[in-house]
Image 1 (cartoon, rainbow, N blue to C red):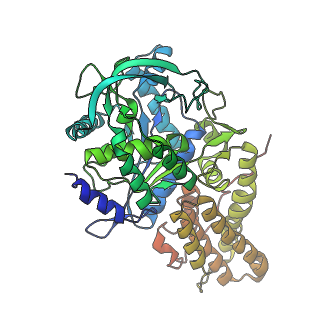
Image 2: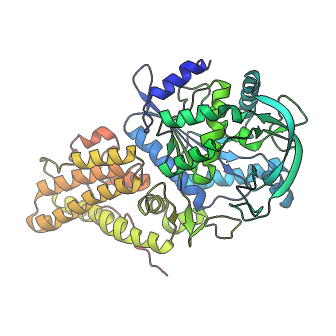
Image 3: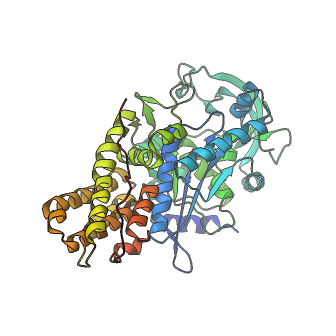
Length: 502
């Protein structure tokens, strides 16, 4: 049973919003992170992957520090855009979405992105929850029948006003808007203007980053129109439970997926919704108003990040500059791509994807710094052995990494870790264990490599696992406080082969 709305909102208002976990009775914190669910009108590309990599890192990190984590991603499979794409491909909509959805699953698997659930809006439990949700909103008096006429973009699955698109061109897809008129059921979004403004004021971290928050607040202050939430011009969607001649508007259907996945679990409300900035309005305005109407707790934080771009433009199949994530994995490896996407630009900003820059970071940071450290030290330990002593201090590095990840500052967290890698490489050069045969120095360096691998395990899991096998330790957070056990160590294989930029 959802909490009464008054109690629900008070609990929400007094929670910390900056990625804090929710404590259960056994004092274990939960952390629920979601991504946008991707339209299956086209195959996955590196632009889709950016957000999923971030979510996977957060899920792995929060598990590492001992929290009970649920990570959700998936595919959005209803609406006119999907129906049109299936028709253009000469396929039945269900056959079409099944085929493309599998490609998204494979792409995330290739990148070591491992969700707890890959949800599809065609899943039967989601259909049931959507129908229940709509009935709750209707019982609250927030749905009425009417007629809608307006400028529509099939690519966005959204209506635009002439103010938003003065040239009658979709600002995202750069295509002419259609003038549609149809009977529809409406959600009383206008009723929730004051509620939303009060939410933003009392919970300043609800919308991030700040520039997105300011945009949303200014638009909401201008006034809200009621939202058309059903369609009759096509039939590929969840049947609208109040009228079988209608199907549910794709956004009213899709947003509910976050609740569907954990409705009967302990993870709601979501700690963090990760979205691209083009989805900010839907998630920061429609979604909290919908939840308020249905009497369900609100998520704690909505982060609307920038796009990965290619030559300064948003990566898009329609623009002809999509870069396949799976092809990049075959070319460079999952960890190199994960590292580059998180290290090369601050999360939240737009970032220009460049293979030249990826190769440079792979060679100079992953290969020359981390890979070389592991190779040199493991070779020396194989030759001279280890003698336990006091380890190099990781405490300040650990604290800084924790602080940066709490703020979603992935680039800064990696910068701190690699500063410690640099320190270890300098330590090798200063101590010259290949000359002194100092087994205590080799122990300090081996223990430091253990700590580095643990801190990097959320970012580059495959590499961290390989390091743990070489130095014989388990990847867990308490391992940062434990000394490395002395064991027989053999020289590591090359972790990162240099890439020729041809």
